[in-house]
Structure formats: structure tokens, C-alpha cells
Length: 328
Image (tube, rainbow, N blue to C red; front, side, top):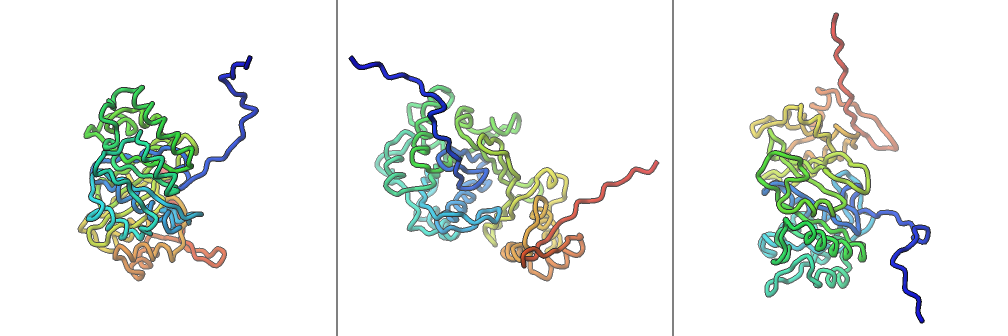
């Protein structure tokens, strides 16, 4: 007579593993990530640029180079693959031979569709983007039904873990301005609860061309700084890099009528608000948004940015402002 197999396991028998990251600490491999934001704030463009970097082993927004090249499944439900998604991928510099999508013209795709795992496995995808997540809920699933939503998300999470594929779901926010940011996503809060990382994109209040991505939940690593980027109608998409939006909230952000020097001053403050950045990288980034080196160096001197050399590379550093001493 066979003994019944125990339903439990002992933790001492479990092999310890390290979390692997597509982009530390924002997007882990093998886990679910939720990217939220209001319509038109640049969520899709943001992820297309991350996906494109993965296909060619490019630089991440914080300047770190991706350690490996990977394949991507970009599944968009709102945009046409030919006239919108592919042109955006090409503009972002993606290797389109490494980007696939599931043809769902005859049968809609859902989170629990076996075609997702089949395509991840056969295409050996390292990143799956579902845009927007609301379009992939099964027709019989109520997004306010906690147990149903958690069941669906757990199945998707197991697929991600099994194939060590990062899954990023893009979600639209509600129009309500009240309440915590984590709770403003359309549908059940249980989606955010299952995700190991929740990211949010918002516009700068005074200059809508500047956007910020920041973390509102992180289960696997300490939350990190916000990342800024610019979406300019003429110059296109450009990373700004890490920034401190708490400090930025107190600063005056340049308006559409701002001069080149005013724009240079604000962009420099954003880029250097968290860490020192190589001067060549600053000049390269700002040149892409129409600000020339001569203007940048003039502003550098005017606002007191310091330069130093480390391992043959020149860095710029923004000194902390001196604290005012109250006179008695």
C-alpha cells in the first residue's frame, strides 16, 4: 500500500534563489509588474523604449547597460500593429526581429489564454507587455471580484516564473484625484496586490512635456528614485534619467515659452538631483532636445555645477544648497 504524499514541504529543502532583474529595482524577471498612468501620459511609449533597449542590449534610463539581449512580446490591444506599434518600435531603435505579437484577429487574447505561455516558450521571450491590461481580462471575469482576479493573476504569475519572463501590464488610471495612487487603477486593487512592482507615470504639473516614472510599490527591493523623460512633439522621446520629484515639486519648471537657458537650467537640475552624471552624457541627451553645448556650459557656470574627473571621465555634480541661518 502506497503512503499518502504529504501536502507540505520543509523550507530547509528549498534551494535559495536570487531575484533576477530586467531593470533593478523596477522590473524583475519572472514576476508581474504593473505600470499605471492617466491616458496620454506616455505609458506605452515608455515601455516601447524599455523593450527596444532589451532587443539590442542598449542603455536603461539610468545609464546602465543591459547585461543581455532578449526577445520581447509586445501585445497591444488599442493600437494598430502596422501604423502605430511598429513605427514606434523603429523610432525607439528596436531590433524588430526580436519583437513578436500574438495574432488575435480571429480570437481575442486573455490573461488565461494558453497562447501566451506557448509564445513565451517558443519565442524564448524575456519580456511580455500587455497594453492595456483591461483588454485582456476574460469576458466572464468581474474586475471587482477579488477571488476571480487573484486566480487569473496567479496563473499569469506562474507562467512568468516558470519561464523567467518579465511581465509588464499597462493600466489606465481612474479620473478620481483622491485616494492613494496605488488604488487609482481601473478595476480591482487585487491586480496591484499580486504584482511585485507597481510603477506610475505622471506629468510635470508646469511642463507637460516632462514626465516622471516612479515606484509606488516594491516587494522585492527598496524603492528607488523617480526616472524622468521628455516627450516633445518635435524632438520626440528622450530620457532625462533619475531625479528627485520631491525636490522638483518645489522648483519652477520651464514653460513652453521658456528660453533655451531656462530649459537647460531645469533639465540640469533634474538630471543632477539624484546622482552625478558624466558631462558627455548630459550634453548628448540635451542636444537631442535642441539645447546646444555652448548653452549648457554657460548655464553650468551660472548655477554652480561642479566638474571633477574620475577614471578618465568628467562628471558634473550639483552641490547641495547652503542652509539659511536665521538671524536672531
